[in-house]
Amino acid sequence: MSEGQHHEHIHISGEELVDKVKELIHEGNVTHIRISHYMHPVLEIPVTVGVIGLVLAPILAAVAAAGAVMTNCTIEVIRTEPPTP
Image (cartoon, rainbow, N blue to C red; front, side, top):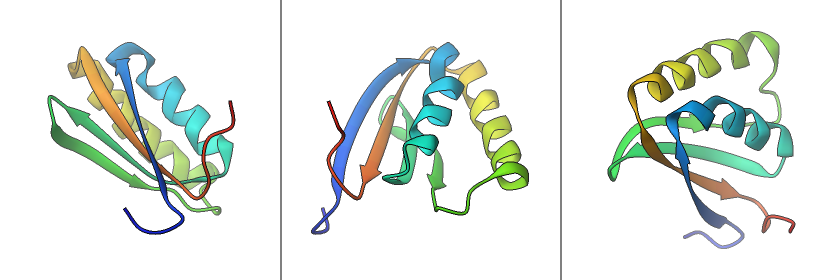
């Protein structure tokens, strides 16, 4: 883990995946999201401050497609600072 980065793992069902990814993107301190299914990476999303509108739509479509075929998955979140409680 690089200095200044904080990793968090969230276990979630495929049905809740899109909403959780949207929530994480809007938090602002997330730099990278990796979605895994049984320890196998399925989708990696580099999140930058400029991710809006037209760029976000295809990303969320890919997340929705991944969520549709997975029952349970893990989201690894890399943040610039620890999550607030």
